[in-house]
Image (tube, rainbow, N blue to C red; front, side, top):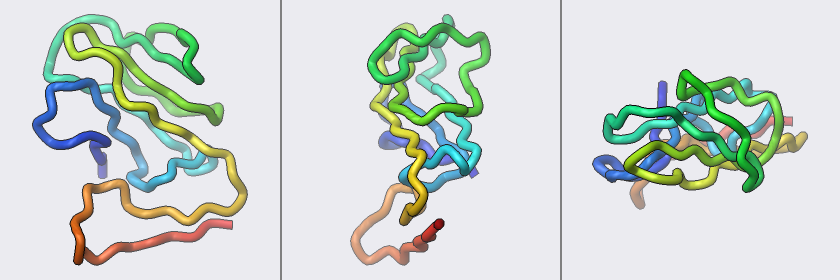
Length: 109
């Protein structure tokens, strides 16, 4: 399922990541979706701090490792999302966790 990467109800631009594992890794075929509170307008994408272009749909399949941000009119710049290309990664579910929650980890080589 989709997993938001900022608190529920926040009036900011945020990412949804699929599949919902952190850290996100390039070989996991990561899709980023840029969301806000419903404003209209183009999504502006940034990669490694540089303007990367506008996409009509506000989601895309990541094909390069790096750090991504998106910007939506009215809610501003999202938090950064790093997509790694490491060979060995320990991942945790990207959902919000509280102390005492059961956590599923996955280790990929």
